Length: 158
Length: 158
Length: 158
Length: 158
Image 1: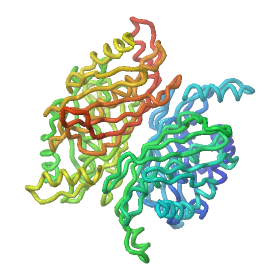
Image 2: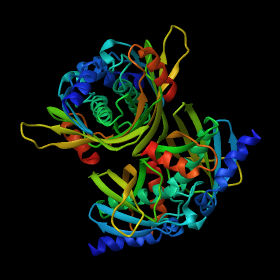
Image 3: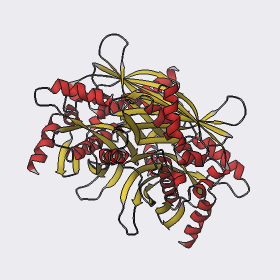
Image 4: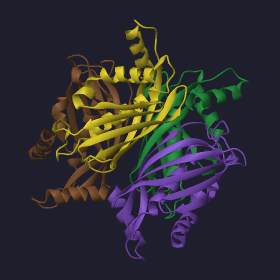
């Protein structure tokens, strides 16, 4: 499990956007990943709530890494598509995105997830968003052929 | 039309996240809004492409403001839900999110949109993402009752 | 609860399509509705499995009636939109669509659901489809004004 | 093109559900397929309009066959997932589902589609539904190994 955590953590830390948003990898287990996002004024929409784009970014990321925990060892994963319902304004002092694998196939994984808004130090929360996502496995080539891999990924999906 | 542009522009400029991402309001017309996002390392996923979350953020925003151009004058809009397909890696030096209203009802608007990736100075692009979104109209109360409005919005959607 | 069941049952029995498919209302509770569909050759796609359209029809219906159990008394409900993942071929001798309300607002409800495929007399099943749906409440006018209601529904959504 | 039409037509005619609904294959071209559904009382929801499930069934089928026109020769296609907005009641005497390929990759195709409701003999229509779908290519084994193919399809997706 430690190896799994390291694999996800290394990838997460390489994401410029997660650093820009201030998101943190909070939990990694087989089939489930959590990402924490503290409130910041840099994340808001026009009324001062956290922007749907920030909520979506951490939830997509949580779902994708959840899928990666179940992907074959020689595969990376990419989000093929997702759908998200924004059920209430994202009001809170921190937000936890919880992504879970519902089904992991050879080619595609289906994940569901939610974003929980916390407004105090205790564990009560409100679910502000629900996601259902499809993640595709992309077979990786041997090290040193990253550009080939990327072209391959582009060709498969596009 | 200038009044319309001002309304959208004021709201856009009040969004902390758009500033954080470096996004710019590029075009406003009745039923159609464009948002431009120049590439930056602060927007990347683990391979250096622009993160799906950034792509999604500008496209959701473009669709939502497109809906706002068609909403009744006493309404604000919120994204109820959307679905996005990420068709190819977001590789480019700038990205244009194009949101269009397909149908504007009394209560809900349906929008579609795409993100175009440009890699050179000319006008050629590849479509990297497709969205279909549902935007809800929220009736606003008179000025000075913003907190009531927000509670109202929360109650309607949640 | 009996009144609730009657309300759903009367509406279900008025649906020509449910009769055409051979679907049965199987369970009604506050926030949750089940619909059962026995296999029939009239429901198949080109390989002999049950068609995604039939799977979707019963799951949409289950989600919509689940939302109706939580709607205000003077409201009917319509499906605004849904997304469904078809995770494996619909192989079985009967299928159970389970729709649940995740969030019931004044205007919109968000439901999730799954279709379970059973291939023998016991209770083991495989989940063949997952749905996430947005259901809109439509305020009804007094009896005898059905045509007005319908026009109203059309205007709100469209 | 005649070969393409025959391939789609043979598959369409093998679908029990399309016959049950009374749907007809109306148009086949590279990247675009149309399916026609005349109104019938057997297709209705509780108010007498055509059921969302019937609308969805023909639109999913149109999108899937549109993808098939662009799939490699040794592949069949399955719907991985779709999202549909039901924008207004399906009122009309006939309905035309139009499915188009937006992007055809090696592994996945993205299609969009709409259902048009016609209420008179002329060509005016209203769009009652919008879909965005992801279709997966499934490599076929040689003839006579259909059961292996199906197991393969099940394994890839599930």
